[in-house]
Image (cartoon, rainbow, N blue to C red; front, side, top):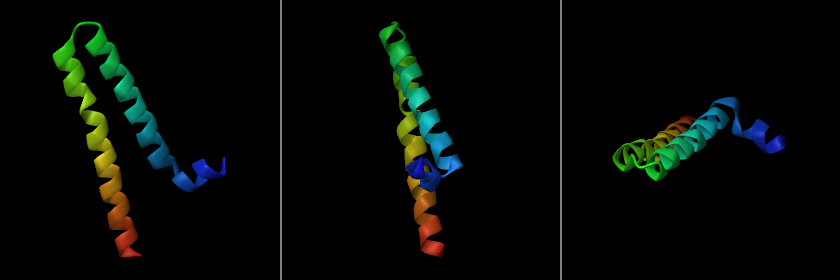
Length: 62
């Protein structure tokens, strides 16, 4: 519980969104729609990169 409080609501929401994107991408890839699965699967690392970038900006301003 302490970890989630430290993480913050916005970051937790983004991580849940990334997990959901990965699950959808795996479903699409394994169901035969491989190109759409790969395309959607690339969204998760992009969102994680944005999260890291925003965290770096926030830490730099303090």
